[in-house]
Image (cartoon, rainbow, N blue to C red; front, side, top):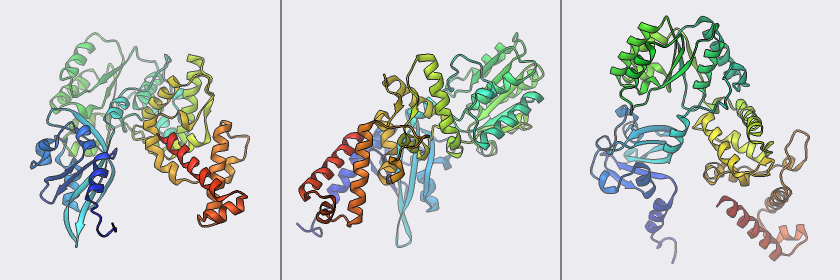
Length: 443
């Protein structure tokens, strides 16, 4: 059968249904026309739930403009690598990273298609605070190697001296809670307690509980985390509390996005923002301050050795490169959770190698690993480099050398085998073995 006669529909259907990425496509009227198995699992729905219904009827967004599919359908412009949090008709919260594209023909938009990575579980993890390890958090123990974080610490120290209300701005997992506690411990004199109020959507009484707690509370630092998650009514109550107790306690709040945008979206009261506006500190995401990543890993491993008697000294060059090229949507908390997971799997190993990385993380970085060639200097032992296990070294060195020879001879097996002094069959066997080993490692 020739390619012209081959019906590709079955291949497209197989690809759509077996990919690890959620796919949702709509036509120009906003009706769902593709909704694959992975998307059903991500959103907890079936095709019948979404057929012939508007996206806004099925899902709840903080703002209608947050539907990336509808946004692309209306604008005709692609939206790449955007995080979206929304709720299905059963009230289930969903968080995805989306790549959304318009589908065009002859200059006319036919619809939009979205490819989604589920990070719902990760988002819940990164909303948890970074670990304290039983020690007070001061500015000295916060990893701040990058110029961006040095500036954050510099402003935070001024906030501690001034004892003014502080607004911390940054994504989940960036370490806003650490900066807040650092400010608390840098005040003079230090307040009696550091109290964190988690402004969770599910707790409608969180502000009432805070009001009761403050009645007999000695001078303390109160950190209200993610105030945009409070209803506007709760925010009004919070503002009343701040105005009543603001001279007795130091209040710090945090938001996950630009507060001006949150006000425009009616998620934050303007007066509540004004209360904190005199001292705002933006904490950049990890991908914008990668020079903090490896020092954070070393700080983590140092504590891990001290608390658990571990032998882990560091990470290999390969893992380092993968870490530095990953986008870390969960920021430092995602990195900490990953290190926790690997720490529980390691026994006598001294270095975290690629083989030790969890399967789910290998999938995230596999594209970079596949498309990034090794270089000759990767196999030269240098004083500052960590040594990789011998079998890993030999496998990667062989792979590097064979690929270089094949490239030299334009992938001609016969000429490459002749140059290597081996039979054509032997070279083909080594190539198959190399590919098989690589696939096994990925799986």
